[in-house]
Image (cartoon, rainbow, N blue to C red; front, side, top):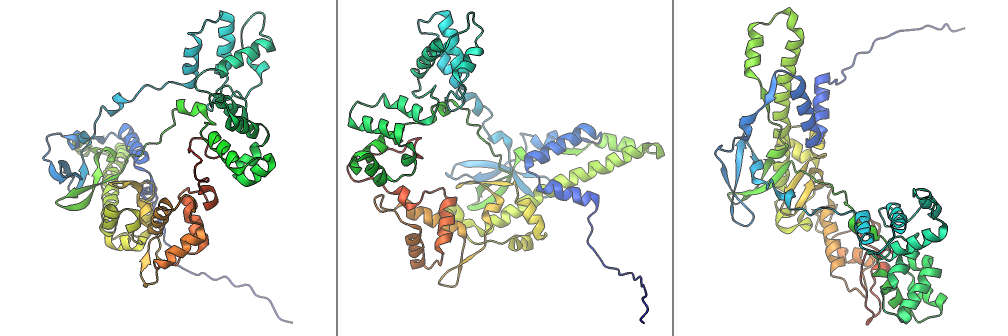
Length: 475
């Protein structure tokens, strides 16, 4: 019988460990510049050894001449002792928002029309309640009796009064407001179309065949209606000119603004990346407080000692962060010079390792730097990670960027015959003829990324039938 024995052994191994401060630096590096600036502002509010660096915004600092895109002289200045450039915030027009038009809401637009009508106070109150119940699309999606309960009138409005008020609102501009569904919204707008067979057929389609209309199958719809395909296509064209969201034109739009971290400028005939001064926090050590603390430091001031160490680390972190961002941006720009001249089709494949080797940092650092950091170029504003992609093999043995392939596909579709749009298979075949081996499913993926409809939905109607792509193109 064998005996059992237990053994305990110790195995030592080296595992990389990040200090809490290094972990924090990694998190800060991955932040967007807006979030990082908020962290620095919080540090300015809580750390007595930090202060705002007003000298960094000195308008009398000697500028460095920069050649603008159109050849007109511009300026950039050298920032700090690291020697990396930045764009002065004084170059930005600070009064640009003063020229923006005042926003008018849909409710205000409709109420303005009601107030110039010869209505009794009771009728105006009921119609105003209907207007206030509309959603952002301009639809009334709540029951009429709920609207009546919200009106503080004695006696309470009956259903007949509510229907009259709804019809009054539906007669206002823009046409289609007050509808209780897409079909009713478009029917209200059809009333402005000249009377005739096309309007009658379009009304029939909206009333009874809205599902078939959404399928984009004109021939099947023509068979169901027993009408010629040309007549049905003309009715569809009339419907496409209508707006299924009449309230959107009065929407704020919730525009998302991006502040670029790096701006591309032409300096002495060469494209160069410079930091955007607006995103660089102006922070420095308060020398007076530092000297006073060092003169009177003792064991009772342990917290102040920790604050001083934190302040020094914050200043170094700001400098290192933006020098790394600029170094990565300049390395990217060096490899993507042709992109500035020729657009997306000239994009080259680029790996994180290439940039990491040149800048002298780890690949993970480059990955964090390119996340939520943006570069303003003559071709638009792009996130830094936009410039990285794996190479696609070509017939010549070289590599091509997927971004360049997408640009080529977009150019092919823009130049196609509207009556015979290119299918994904035909696009893949044409790419192969240019030495690019791209599978059909890859073409489909790129086309969807470009937000382009399939060929059958891009096909133009028969000759002689007018169409117009409006807000209702999705119908």
